[in-house]
Image 1 (cartoon, helix red, strand yellow):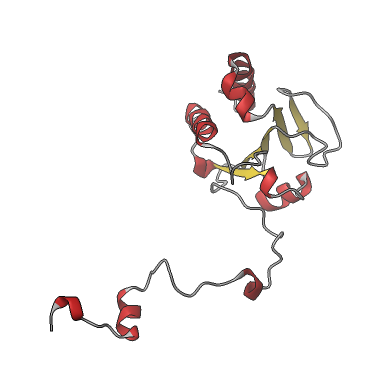
Image 2 (tube, one colour; image 1 turned 135 degrees about the vertical axis):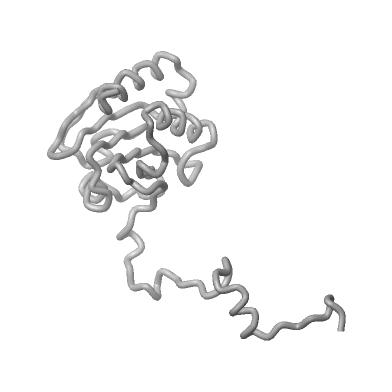
Length: 166
């Protein structure tokens, strides 16, 4: 028998590869959890900071906008683990109540969304910090517009410095 002809039994394979990436896949139906009960997000939300974007083309953000976000987080001494990143376009039925229930966010930064989109009972212009209940909101233009406009970047940075006391 050569090494090319070794045949492993199912039992041996299971013991050798206990942490396989492929195997028993559990479907959402078998968990009895409504599909919309959890909002899809990126990050660990360790500092209770929510970044909410509205990007119809990507699951979260395209590379250039993700780079901008990570640079912004680095400038604030944060990482992706400190925040939760949610794409409204992937979760269109969310409201601020659902966001607060799941993430317990203290600070919410939105990009390309209005207060009406989130069912908030107030209206504020972009780049204005607004406190409501136990949260602080900062609404901004879409990230793709900020990315190409130096004046918008400056306005965002001024607000970020105020929001996080930098």
